Length: 376
Image (tube, rainbow, N blue to C red; front, top):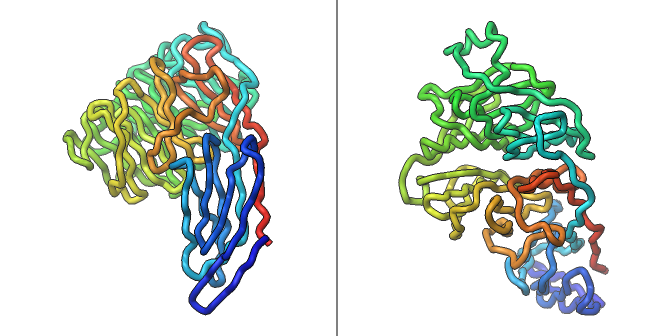
C-alpha cells in the first residue's frame, strides 16, 4: 500500500513495502519518509530507480555496495519506478582450440567485440587477430609478424606490409567501421578496416615506448596506455593527441607500472597499477576519485554490461567490484569459472571469456532475472 503526499517544497512517502520470501531472487524494498531501504543480501545485480524532477525524468542506478543500503530521494522528486536487473550467468558454449589453424590460438591474451557483435581474439604468439561471430564461429583472421621499417606516416601507404605486427597487445573497435591495434614493439597504434586492411597509424610527437591497452569513450576519444612510460594518452577522432595522464610517481596522478585501463558508460576511467598495487578510479575529466588495494598478479580489467568491474589474471581468481570500487563477495560468473585472462561482452549482455586452457573461449549467457516493483 502506498500513501503519497505532496506538500509544497516537500515530498514524503509514508510507507511502501515489498514483501517476499528470503529465497526470492530480487532484493527487498521498503520506503519510509522518502528513504529507500534496499536489502541486497548476497544477490548480484542493479536497481534502476526512475525519478521525475519538475519536467525531467531520469533513471538512477544503485549498486550493491553494501548488503543493506539506505538511499534518499532528492528533494521534490517523484518516484516513478523501481526495477531490479540480476547479474547471474550460465556457461553455454566453448570454442577455439590450441594450434595454428583457423579458429585456433597458441597464446591468446585479449578479447574485444564490435557493434556488430563480432568477437576478436588477439594471439600474441602468432601476431594475429582472429575474427569470430557472436556464436564464436570462425570468420577470418589477419596479422603476422612484421617490423615497421617505413619510418614515417607518408611512407606507410607505400609499404604493403603495414598490416603486420611486432608485439600485438590489444584490439579495439572504432566508431567508423574500423579497428585500432596496439603494435607495441613497433611503437605505434594501427588503424585497420574490419577486414584487417591497413588504414593509417597513430603516433604522438614524442613517440610511444610500448603502447598496450586501448579504450574509447562516448566522445570517440581514444585512450592509449603507454605502459613503459607509465602514462595514458588521449587522442581525438583525427588521431591528434589532446592530453595525457600519468608519468612515473606515487601520487594520485602518477603511476609505477600500469598494466591495464577500462572505461565505463559514464566515461569514468579505471587504472590497474601493478607497481603501486592499486586499482584507481578517475572522473571523465581525469580527476582522481578513489582507489583500492589489489595484488600485482592482476593484469586486465573489463567493465561488464551492467557496470560491474572485473579484475582478471591467468594466475588468480577473478575479483569483481561495483563502480565505487567496493568488492563483491563473489563475481557474477557461472559456477566453476574462476580464472580468466580477458573478457568482453555483446549487445545482448552475453559475456565472452578467455580461459587459460583450450578450448579458450567461454560463452556465458545471462539468466533472465528482472523484477518491477509496484509503485501505485
